[in-house]
Length: 451
Image (cartoon, rainbow, N blue to C red; front, side, top):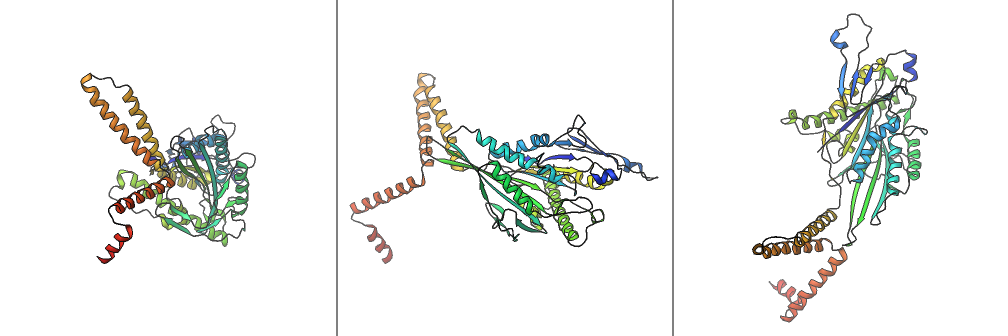
């Protein structure tokens, strides 16, 4: 069981906040975020002025470059992205998703800029660097990617060459889980391939200007990387696969229409964004309650299907994945309520427990374990040093176990063609035996029909 890892990042003041001459109300150290209430109102209840203190796995201070504990893009990636990539190479599904109010720095944290890239480009670059240094001739890699946006509760393929933004359906398979029917999954051979696809996808993503953000993301974006590792077992000739899915999610920002000045289409977009984020909050709360003692006697139903976003993130929240949440906040007193809401949201998410497993071909794993067992038994047989009275008994026991394990390993190592040949051989032997008894397969069939 793995708890969702939660990190907080605070950005510098933007132009709007500088013009408002607002105060910084956020303090941070390595694992603690303190939010101070800045109020000039007289008679304000003193209890409301008490700072709010939250503890998280990581806290990134990106407010001022001159500060000793300043965290740049590289520091954020090294703390979060490297672990996610390690998990993927071990065969686990993994996910990073960024959450926060509009204009709080989510897209910058995930994608970055051309000069200072974010988590997604750095992770993809690092992925191919690791593949390039592989020296195992029996190990090969395949990398595939997909890129989609969820806009007004509709899924669009951002890598669709036609650029039609056709609405795609979300379906659920009993083994594969939720997936998008018709989504492009493209094979890539280098980071340059991925970078080109990301740039094309980003051009198709829906953005618009609001009072809070000149380039506000009006959709949730999900960039998936599928890593397939194929290992050839030289001794048995059997190949086994590990398939890992890395989901990198840049959520659209929660927003208040009063602040963003949204009207018409922008207002409708903001309403749908808030609806899906509210459902995400309900899912997080349900999962957090289930992971704590308080959830023992509570309703076990989790409303994943109430939103396309939560349906697609089902595995990443409470399922088969190792997940990281990056919550981004504004340092400004003007955004105190929004920052407090984000921190409370993140505080609930850190209680979620996932159940990640290695996505490995079971046959390959069993063969590997049987081989290890065979080697251990051979070593025991070689080093058997007991009294003469027990020696033969112990040797016979070890030999029997060794033969049993070798037989199982041989059975598991058979290729499909070998199994077909073996089936045909058994069929021929059966037919020969029946012919010796004066019975043929045709004769047996006609007897059955008469009966």
